[in-house]
Structures are given as C-alpha cells and as structure tokens.
Image (cartoon, one colour):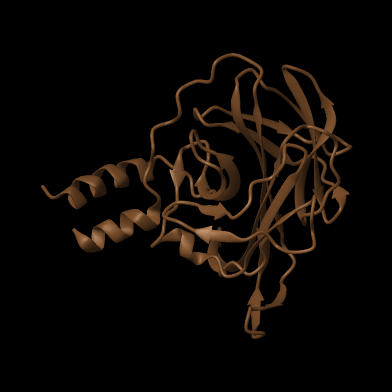
Length: 256
C-alpha cells in the first residue's frame, strides 16, 4: 500500500470522528514563535497549504499595542507566521470578513452562509475591551486556578450562549454565559487554553467581495476564540493525537 493510501485510510477514520467546527487561534508551539493556526484545537487538526489554509481571502491581524498598521503574516505549511512577536502585555487579534461563502443544511433547507472566523490572543488575563464582532475577553477576575471571561456580540454582552474551554490534550469544558455575558472556568493545567464561542445571525443580506461584487447570504455565522498560556498548575497532559483535515484527506485521495 502506498504512503498516500495508508495516510488516506487513517485520515478518513479520524475525519469520521471529528466535527466540522473549524476555528482560528494563536498558539506558540514548543520551540516555535507565536503563530496563527486554522483547524480544530482540541482535536489537533491543523489545516495546511495547499489545502484549507488557502481559503482565506482577506485575513487581517493586528496588535492592540500598535494599531497603526496590520501585522504581517507569512503563510507556511500549517500556520501563518508573524513577522514580529508581541510583548507579554499585548493582545493580538485576527479575522477574515471575506471568507468564501458555503452551503449549510438546516432541515430540508440549504442555506448560503457568510462565515466570519476571528481570534484574540492575550499575554495575561487583565480585563480587555471587545473589538471583534464576536469577541471573548478576560474580565480581570482570575487567580491561580480559575478565570472569568465575557462574551460580546456587536459590542454588547451575549447572554445564554454556549462557551467552550478547550485544551491541547482534547479536554473540552462547556458553560453558558450568564446575564452579564460571563463564564468562569477552572484552569487546572499548565499550557495553552482556547476559549471558543459560535453565533449565528439568521438575518439574510448582502456583502461585497474583495473585488466589490455583491454576494447574497441567508445567514451569518461567527466563530471566535481567545487563547492564552498558563504557567501555573499541574503538568500538562499529552497533546491529542494529530488528525488530518478534510482538505488534506481529499488531496491524498486524488494522489492515491
């Protein structure tokens, strides 16, 4: 059996167990600088190029410490590398307002969805103000083993929304935001955490593509993550086994 066919079989098996809820997030892998990734953090699914990483049409990143110019991103095999690394006090953001539209199925209906993936990285858990359309920020209420976060949509606290805390080992914890948009999570391990939330606006409308052409949509979907690293806590659990993204499975299928 060829290597491509062997990988394809493994990838198809892993794909069958994986959800399709993709996200973007900032992370500093061991021995590497902070970079921007696309895939599913808790399942260790990383999109690559050629493949899913090439779908972004207008991915923009910026620093809250210096908003005078966007951050320079360099597309590598499985990450967008940053030209400059942030300070510990900084907060980095990124989003793509022109990600290609796709079909979603709700019952017997097929809807055209406009999706906005977004992310934020913080060097510490000081209180921050919302900037993204769908944003998650620390409230400043944190200690060695627990922290509070607030979810915003269009600048207003988002209540009753499911929020997930994801770890690199594959642990996922869920909470619903309270009347103030707050959630609180235990942080028992050292390492990187990703707080994730999704939201759907069922109002149809129209947007302009990067060339200025109109694009109609039936629903607007948003996903946002907040990533941060904790030095305190128990030793981190082993990272979840790496899984192949659907785009890489499709590419291997063609080459098999």
